[in-house]
Amino acid sequence: MSVFDGLRFRKVYSPIHNLDPRIKFVYVISIFVCAILFFQIIPLLLLFLLQIPFVLLAKVQRQWLRSLRGAAFLATLIFVINVATSYFTSGYHLTGPILESAAALTLRFVVLVESFSVFFLTTSPDHLGLALEESRVPYEFAFAFTTAVRFVPVLAEEAQTIMDAQKARGLELEKGGLLKRIRNYVPVLIPLIVSAIRRSLELAEAMESRAWGATKKRTNLYLLKLHRGDYALLAITVGILATAVYIHFYLSIPTITQLIH
Amino acid sequence: MIEAVDVHFSYPNKVEALKGVSLTVKDGEFVAIMGQNGAGKSTFVKHFNGLLKPTTGIVRADGVQTTKTSVAALSRNVGFVFQNPDHQLFSETVEEEIAFALKNFGFATDVIESRVTWALNLLSLTQYRKTSPFLLSGGERKRVALASVLAWDPKTLILDEPTIGQDHEQKEILRQFILQLQTQGKTVVIVTHDVEFVAESNPRVILMKEGKIVADGVGKDILTNPALLELASIVLPQIAQVFSKLSPLNLPKNIIDIYEAKDLILKAWESKTQK
Image 1 (cartoon, rainbow over the protein chains, first blue to last red):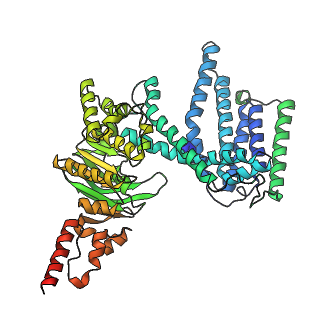
Image 2 (cartoon, rainbow over the protein chains, first blue to last red; image 1 turned 180 degrees about the horizontal axis):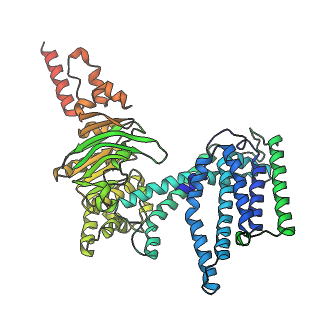
Image 3 (cartoon, chains in turn blue, green; image 1 turned 90 degrees about the vertical axis):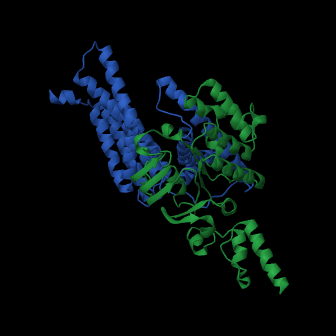
């Protein structure tokens, strides 16, 4: 469940945690866009390195590393599939550029994971809900979203308990071929879904008995306000995006293979 | 037989849940592990069938070291019934639910059939044979979960909080049932907060606190020792509370059995009226 650990918010105070979630989200989306703009390894590497100061400032390096480790399997898969497909389509030649472009695509995925990980690690579900509300998302949806985010670790823990319970009844998850292995997860998934539904019904009753939705216009205890740091991040974001777009359209980026030759 | 030797266990988040626990549960014993939430009770018993492996130390079930084999192989001899039945029910009918483990362990079809019938009968679930387990009440679901483990007749049975959500009658049936298992030579380990249930069944009691065993002995001695119970955040059983307040009558204080209590009170009363 290490992937979830890399996304789970922990209460820490840092300059990054205090930033406005809306601006942080704009930043993440911009990084996302930049990562999509490039398919060369050098700019993607730069994007990757760009996140590290944020991680260090937010003091979430350990959880962040864990989320990267969690993404390692998928990253490897992306790399292998890319190498394999280009290898077969290029007439069985394993060349430098093939490896490089596969590495770049893998890096693109890693950049996406790392920026989202930073976002979720440093933004509390409450802040996130508040940001949604203030972006005119109806409260019901904002609430559903924050609740969903909040229950991810709970579900992860529950999945572990269910796996234990079924293992104690002789279920061997890792046994058999691919299809059998997928089928092995049925006894885990059904209790998980059933208890999630049951939990959501209970939650709904508990909320209604506390007058949820009694008034159309809610007020908030905390309000989001942009501070100096938020404007700074916004400026940085715009800067990164503008630079990326400029480089993409007006400069040619050398690949590592070209640099070597 | 279950043996734990100086077991330490830390969760991946570095929380040390067990700090050197040693325990031997002999064949045919009935043991209740008690203690406050977070004392490490469930963590400890999850070592008995290998669901958790000790960080350091050794756990052996019937001589087999749990680190050397799979949970499935260990579970054949050590049945574990989880606290919440909803964490394991998934089949369309109660019958299939009970047959699940038997299929996993590779029993023959006719044996599965007879074992399912036997287990359904044992826990008075026969009428629900073709019912979906999700339609049953909480107590019934708990019995299905128990039946699904008992069906393969494990030598040792671990019950995590078996009395939660059960009414008095069901608890009494469960208690009789455990005693019956004992007469068949089965080992039963329960993890519980239910002090009255333990007092009535009088098993060997083990108190845990902060990842360590703080007391181990017969229920009669441990459940009547206020100092020990306070350590583990447990209150005295009601009978023991009464006897602890009857000190002017010069009665013994280590009483948890209703019948023994009745005899003592009657005797005290008779000697008073004779004077």
